Length: 307
Image (cartoon, rainbow, N blue to C red):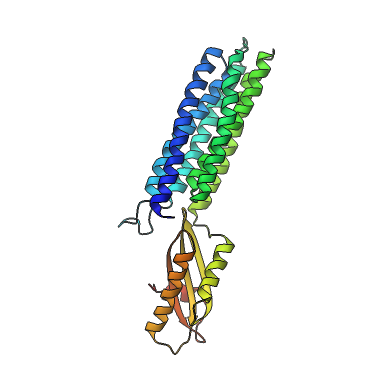
């Protein structure tokens, strides 16, 4: 999948979420206000934070797909992980605001039950947000986008918060008005938990995690299929956003020419780039079999790039 195709798919998912969240936020805020429902107003703020997150994700996708430049030699793939951290911070702030508002409402001695009309937007939100979660996470996995996957979980927390709001509103309508602000506190807790999860995943992405063991094994098999490469002495790979960068050390016959060793490394690199999806670049150091000292110092001090 090309960068342009990936960006187009990601932008489409973001715009669907933006339009949906504009509609939901407007409906929830309006009905929550006229119905006097703390839980529904809190839920509207959550949808508004989703909307802000959608816009940030859209810009993050655009930045991450920009090519390398003089200041970013490895491209801009980490932009999506940074976006995921921003979404997590938005979730924390939303949780704090909702929780504070709910506590203030509980301390009000003249609690009033909201109108039953507040039940309907909660039901609509549950259905729509669960659909949005499934749609966005599917697209995020398809294009391997940490930002979209984080945004998908943001969408799902809105569905969960709508469930809590629905329970609180229904209970309040049935004669237990304190359940409405209590539901707001539950919503805040759920949003805060989701924020922590998204933040932790984003931090892990920024630490250049290795791709899966299956991907490493595929790289090994493709390399060993090249006639003339006798062994692989080291494979290191890291992910920047959805992009994979590979560092390898291979062993070849010590009596072949430098040009022949270079050619074998080039074949391995071409095979990996052609068959391992999202691989951006491969650096291969060629060692002569039988005289190689396998140490980290050797790897760090003598590695050269083979094209």
